[in-house]
Length: 479
Image (cartoon, rainbow, N blue to C red):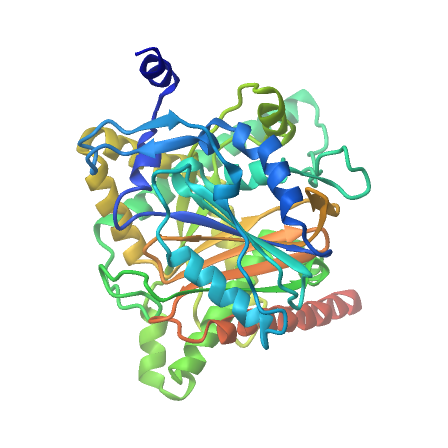
């Protein structure tokens, strides 16, 4: 009786969004691949997880969803965790012919395999595998009910330490602060900001509601069939220098995010033209230009917080805000074939600026929450399927550590993050790490059968932008 009472007191209710992400047909996972520069030692990693990750309440609790679809009372029930049951070390042939392809297939198969709901919903796969970019690979899978992607990535980084200072947590590049102004001009700037925010918020929310209610012509070359299950997913990643993006950014006086989104748009446009031979088919070319493709871009709604808070939570049991706290915006994709490759970046900046100067991310979060409270989880599930079913891709850009870090003594070469379970044919996550950018694609092979070709076109687009930006700077200096 006393044991039962103790467990009941330790129970916590499951947030509506956590319950949503555990529904059949919307069972979402976050996949993180960590490449290491040195050969791995599984016992060291297991011991490290015992001292950090399982001290977080969500990673030492079982998710009980009740009778499904919101009929039962979902709750987190604390349990004793044996880390060894969550760490898988497969036996891999050391002389494997193509280790990069093996890693892609292993990650894809791991994502598709069911997760044991009778245990805390996380696992690590430690692969003794030498690839093009790593001597050892760890692949982690976290159920989305544990937290959103930004929270989970921050928690994972809180388990790491700087290579140059093994006791110090990773550091991130802080955003530049605007120069101080006098009181009058500060007031004027604040009023202009308020007016601009209100204007863009009204316009963007109206456009988002119109899209959700009347998607129009949903003919889309990169959309999966309605209701299709993602049973043929593929995860791939490639690494490029961060300096290439910064060169374009500096030449055009834009942000890294503008260049990345422009690069992706250019790559997608070239992919569609090559795959469907649209360059030589004028009628189909015009039809594609008339289709308004949209992407979903996620925004983190949680205030920027030092990962030291998460490290203290795992080490000392202190309190820290946690959960799924993300909003999204619907952003039009510029898919027209342009002679000027930099036009994709300009269009990306125009669209991104309108979104950043609006409250659309907060609105989307509030809309989902209100729909859930008034109409129930099933209604939110149908709303999300309607949104993702009429959009081309999901895009996210994650800022990583600015210095080399280690994961329980294993120096990290790269970090690649993605998601699985969202009914979307293309999920593209770009993660920065020191001087690298890791482009991670999760695709439905029924829709995009050649993801490597798509990724190569995206990277080639960046090279073209770099060359065009150099010419642009030379021309500007001559003028």
